[in-house]
Image 1 (tube, rainbow, N blue to C red):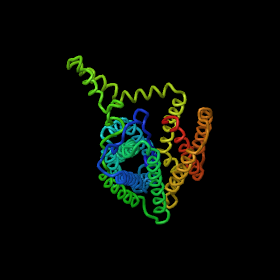
Image 2 (cartoon, one colour):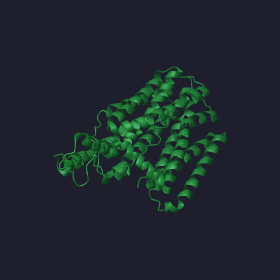
Image 3 (cartoon, rainbow, N blue to C red):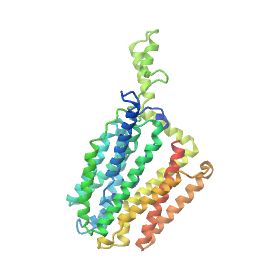
Image 4 (cartoon, rainbow, N blue to C red):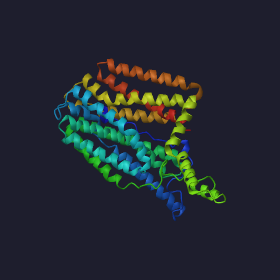
Length: 409
């Protein structure tokens, strides 16, 4: 089951919406440090966050959770894993995604990163010590939390630097996560195929790494500002909040307090996060190019993650081996991660008139993905399944950065 290869699989780097492009990061106000010291300070913070992102992806047992659940350690049936355990992930992810997204910005990232790291620890404690169906369902529930909490890492890094550094630090954080996924998959495959250790031992190793990630999360700095809820609401060119401006402008006319309160409430409502987000949604609907890529991202991502959730079950049906050394899930995950990184990087250098060729590119790549899914579903050769999976992930990662260009200009 790819219940285990999901949240690390797709490190998504969020880019700030247009409504906050002019907001200042937490370190933009004078700190009393020399410019060189201040620059060195935020560089170290970015370095530590990237190191944290790398270490939290080192979970070598993740690629082998399905054979672990179906093997002698847990003895669950394929029907139980497919119909009773894995679906909990999808439902829990759906239930917590929006609340965690809002809480991430409201709580300023760090608490949600702590929650994510703590959930990873719970996942492996349940995998190791859980024995019944309920324990595995709770394991999937915590997986849903870790997936939803990815937004905290993706957006946290933007609170550390000025907008001029957004593109660079986004690349650093994405690279660190991809390298963590790649390293984790390679280590897991070496442990299984070369060292011949058991899935249970591999899960103990994973528990050690996620525990280290939890410790590192306590050293993350708590930003003073965030992109939406905790940004400063200053009037352009004045340095004063709308409420302050209302009070100043109201003095000559001696408006009553109730009138001031109403004006303040109206200004707060207009500047509220939800209203601004709704306005962004309306902008997307009005622009054909944004609408096209947004719809592609929604539906293609839905199919992509469903494939990730269940692909290991498919592999086990195509090749139901009991010899752990012949289970190559980790190597396949490593190869697909590497191809995804290469295609994603290459997409950034393509010089194409997307307004003219968007529909054609989307159609060709989506048809290619559909053919790969059909091939995986009909073949009885595990190596064909592996190759189709690698190409599917690579094609998805190829289009994601291309979709970012028109959506987040």
